[in-house]
Length: 91
Ligand SMILES: [Zn+2]
Ligand SMILES: [Zn+2]
Image (cartoon, rainbow, N blue to C red; front, side, top):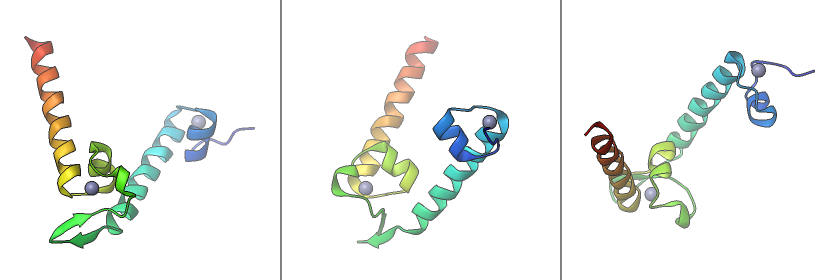
C-alpha cells in the first residue's frame, strides 16, 4: 500500500495527488534553504559548493542561489530567452 503525503511517493511512485505534490514542493523548498545556507562568499559573491561543471547553468543559479559570474550569465541568458519566446508568442 502506498502512503500519500510523502515526497518519496511523489518521486518513486510518480503520484501527483495533492498531498504528495505538496510534500514534494515542501521538500524542494527545504532542500533549497539548506543549499542556500551552504553558499560561501568568494570575492564578495555568494557561490554554491557545487562541482565546477555545475557552474554556468541557470539551474545552479536558481536552485543553489549561486551568484558567480558564469551562473549569473546563464541565468541572464535564460531569462532573455524566456522573454523573447513570450514576445514571439504574443505577437
Ligand atoms: Zn499521493
Ligand atoms: Zn556558479
